Image (cartoon, rainbow, N blue to C red; front, top):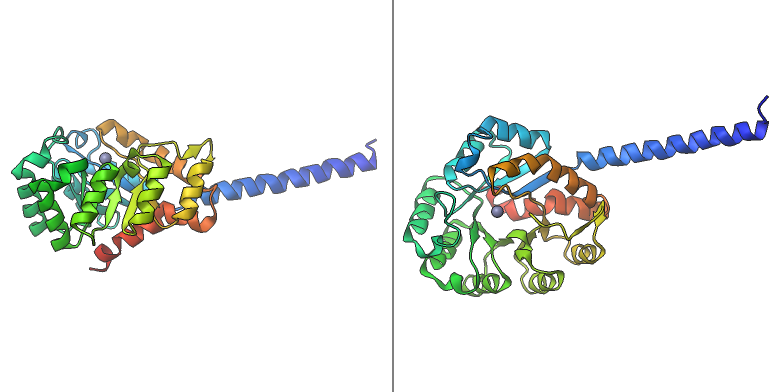
Length: 283
Ligand SMILES: [Zn+2]
């Protein structure tokens, strides 16, 4: 015969276990339901056959992506995805017609012609992701890029060092800049840049120092708390095989973001992207 106390103890243990399990399941379900906007996707020519448009979109939907910022070499990739899912895809215009122009495009007038003709034809939320470092921003092609951003009132998605971002704001003070990979800079440099440039946002694509296990790294957490309105997440599908990581990236993002206060979690997951997109969305 069971001792009455042990019966009580074991049943209360079961009860406590049930509550903890329910909370854990509820918590993780909530976290995994969090809308996530992926702000750093490319659908370049060599991805088109590996992941045809319908498949790429199905992948994004399966990952429960709220919006997908897509820029491609060439832009035809972005246009195919946009046609497939206008509610999901946010078109961003890359100055590259194909892979391999990262370090040469800024000296090639054809890059500017590409941007000029596409902007005249289609609607975009931004120009980028482009690669430019330091004094590259002073080159004619880059000056042309800034002029087009101004004319069409679009943001710039810049894979740049801090020096280049400084020069962008120096030449075009009203610019809205999404800093790709947060420049791969350290926390201190990012803090300094964000504190001096109110129209600078930063994506966390293709870096992991901000994640510690299943939580935000404490140093980065402080930075996120200090600048709650500036960060976004993104996968960076720079090569076709990177599309396989879209779902895992969204899942990982939902996990570490859940360690932040709820309002901040939502801001980094998708709300900050909505603010950057507000002018595009209201047009
Ligand atoms: Zn990229």
